[in-house]
Length: 315
Image (cartoon, rainbow, N blue to C red; front, side, top):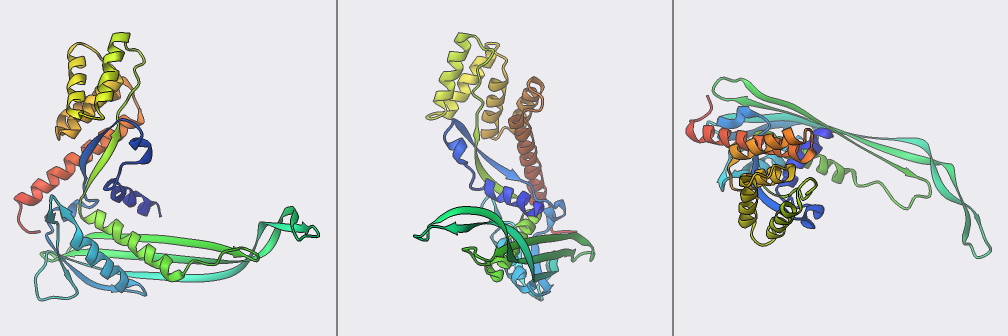
């Protein structure tokens, strides 16, 4: 389940702009997260081969759609072929998917009415033991990619998931449809595999640092003016922060924000230098740690894209 959550994080970045960030001053960053599996840098064509098991066909169809829709800089990342074909491809995907549903009786504590008045209004509630039914759905998708040129397996992963729901006597709910739960598990697995095989482009609003603690009054006022400027002219805000740095101001908020400016302009090496300086000024600061990881990932994704563009087919 954690694997699905981690991969979902990459997908959410595409539509990022969290409510908390939207209420504060932000800079918008366009970035890339690299594919989870570097083996696919030179894989251009993929065939969706046999997927066995009770839900294998569902995953095969979902994967075909997800991978066909994967694009980078407006270009399809893979040429996806469904099923067996006479066309020679760089790699094939196959696997097995099973989902088991079990139910068993159990007992759990629930808040229930134990006394009513003459108008049938509950006057006393207690937590009491009641009879219940628990349903568990255990899901596992196993996926393998085989490279055509040498027959070597270049990707083998397992995607387990589990859903448990308990319904007790007197509850005002029923079990969610097992079919809908399994469909969601299939979609989660397909999303995780797609992010393992291909990079993800995203646009994300990153909150700037606003603390002026330690600045002189004049420095703080100038810094605050630049913060206000981010709402209407981010480039001018960045120029103002660069000017403050040239005047000798050294502060974690200034260094970090200048790093964001460089990242926004696509100057990733400069951004890494500035974030590294911010890390030295404030070791372990979450925003800085995330920025270093984000920028490093973006650089790696670009390097892999360049390698893909300059190389031929898989080999």
